[in-house]
Length: 156
Image (cartoon, rainbow, N blue to C red; front, side, top):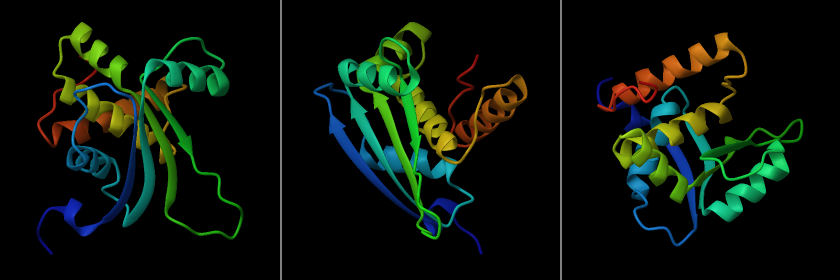
């Protein structure tokens, strides 16, 4: 079988826009980026919520015990035993913070958005970066996936 593997899978991506921030990528871009991280999965359902600094700060404080907004949060679905659904969970991205970080890091905003979507989806799939070994593995996978669509290493 030939063709783009992203066209062979089903992703149900619910995009919630809870911010007035302008410059948000298209639904098609979000689907492409989520699909990169889900390339080995035959089906997946997830929610991507785009928020402002206030909501990001509130969630970051409530769930991570940290003050202030953060660029991306991932909340893996916790399904009861015996329930077999392709529901992965939710990703929350702080839109104004993405733009600010991209500017400060001297990278195209679209590249930073792509990185954070891939990063968030990988967390939903169980990847983490709490230890050095985990970080190397997850970052290497992010770099490989982003490079496959022409986006430079986000960690340089």
